[in-house]
Image (cartoon, rainbow, N blue to C red; front, side, top):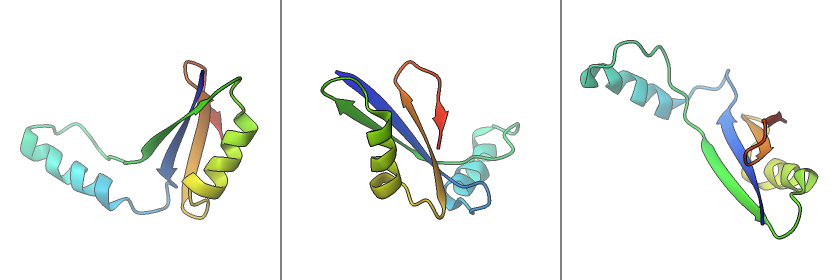
Length: 84
């Protein structure tokens, strides 16, 4: 079984309120050397045969990510990332 990982993140110019909340909470935990936090999501797609990166890209573009406000990266688990 082949696993493709899709990491979805808000585009850098989009405000990330969850990341901001975490960044604001860190000093209360004694962490003062973090300048920002961005929060995204990881989706794992298991293919029955060889990993199909083109199919995974289509799935990510049409279903998993909103291309207006999000970027995504696709990779076969254990292989270097490919930016979309």
